[in-house]
Length: 263
Image (tube, rainbow, N blue to C red; front, side, top):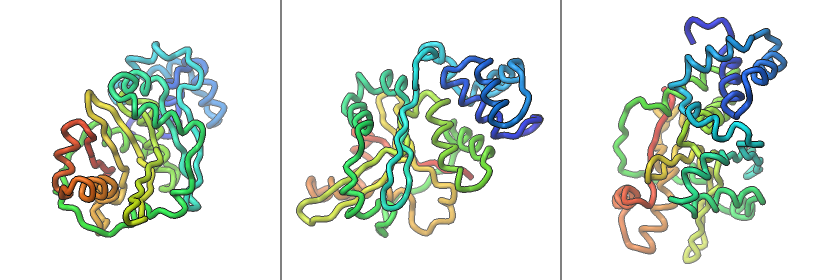
């Protein structure tokens, strides 16, 4: 970040805490206590104004400002790895309750836990080594800009995923959930795959599944195979369609896939 006198993590935290519905004074106190700094309300407000294009949720903040626990969190331990499941209550209600009630119900159900058995016996989506015929496309959108900002606040590379997911969930207008558990089991072959969706967004009438891959350009296996794996099993075996048909079916309203990465 250029022309700022505070560490990026301080600004990141201030923006996120404020857009969770807290006042400027509450945000000031939280930041000063957490980072042992001495910011004022004027400074916090200047950051909010400066980064308002990066945080479009600011336009709707007043609608959920007095809501307790805007974000639901729950940790799942799958395959000896910790996954912090998150969903934004206000955005999920506004974006999904009418257009995608099934998705909203699926996400909210994880408040009561997750069927961990599948994650003990299924293969991870990131493990299958098959190739999919997808042509990568480059470009920069708001998701890329938010990821770049969030990554600049990291203290080490292990924090990248968490910082990116949390920043997008709280500060954009499309992300409704992060680290959503998914699984698919094919009874005929007694095999299955499991995984966690990094970011679920709703834009208009389309659901977007997003996978944060900071080193995707250096991976030998195309990262999109991690997400296309379950649809491929389901559509090829049940409907006798090739994997090349899946993106077309997704665009018709079933689901849309977007791959993005931090360069």
